[in-house]
Length: 263
Image (tube, rainbow, N blue to C red; front, side, top):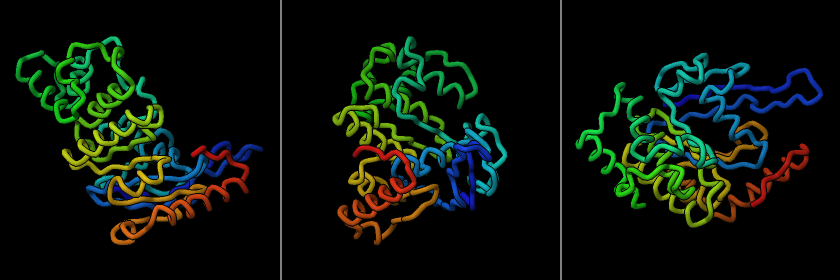
């Protein structure tokens, strides 16, 4: 479904601050995989997401999505196939517009038409919001800017997935939220991914969550995938063992003078 084959990316090549961010990285996802991604700062997690989404062109290698070579496609063209949600719940929405208007804008890109506000269309958005159990279906006319960070991130997630993208990238999408809202957004994420059967990758710094959510966990370090857990191996892989492995990758990061994330 997604095939990342031997990709390399170096920033500031030939300068004193040259950084080899991706080093021959290989990763293959099956349709329906939900992969959690962990690793210290500088490991290449967001760089990998940027490469897949087309934020920049890779130096070499190839990226295929649903049997299509997207290596040379622009970020704009890939956005039709790839949904991406960032950390900041303030991004991805128009704060002065209502929940209904924001959802309508996202839906219009799919339906290739203008939302007309018919009863059937309002009913459709209400039915999308109800399973999230946040009460947003009763606040369709509320400006997005009046919502909490968690509520806004839930709406942004819905907007990001309303088109049922081929691939969903979640780039630490709960990092800016308090623990209660973060937990709720993970629950909402699991509901939406399951409902739409989305192939998903999710960066997280919560090791316990990394083993619980989805069906597969990868650990990145220094621009490479150094551990890929799935199936029975993932089920039997203890939290303590993964933490030991993760701490090892953080020590490697220290030896390369990289900044470590705070647990």
